[in-house]
Length: 227
Image (cartoon, rainbow, N blue to C red; front, side, top):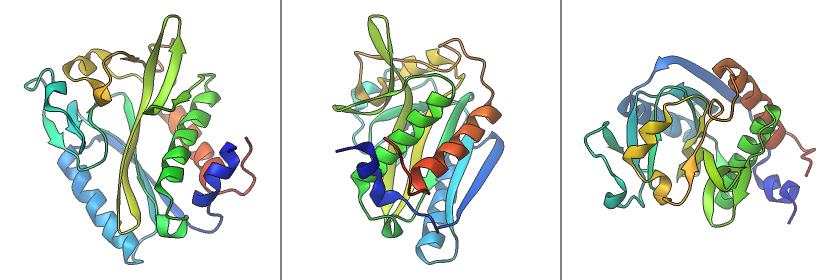
């Protein structure tokens, strides 16, 4: 099936979407509480959909499938139960986190199509900076092929409640990659992680945000999706 057909269930031309960029570092418990409030407001028609862009202080989060053995250094950074799907991941400065609160009741209620759309959004954003991001059939996320190896540049983990999505994705712009050593990222030990900086790019967070906004429209809000 073509990507255009896979994305069609989540496209909306009429739904207004709020965008918010929070400067500084947002604590993880604070972010969880905010998402909970937003999900309820969107569900009840009291708020429009929201894309929230932020950074966290260094921390690890555990998804619903997290294996305790994958927390290699439990005392290194705070560890939080995220309540999202997936396993352990790292968040920290230099990583753009995008929390995606969309009303899937108005977008086809197809969670698999939604995850595909999130991956496509990341891949198109990376293409703006000449980074070739790739999917993998056996694991979620976006990957970069390198000589003799492949590294993850973006992670995804979502939750859906009453038809509203929350949590979302993270893209490694310029985080301290050594911080990933305290976990087995997403339960995958045979591959590494990378970032814009690690790939030799000096992209700013503002430039990344601008590309995310443009490519969100291309994936989620237009009929003329191209393959």
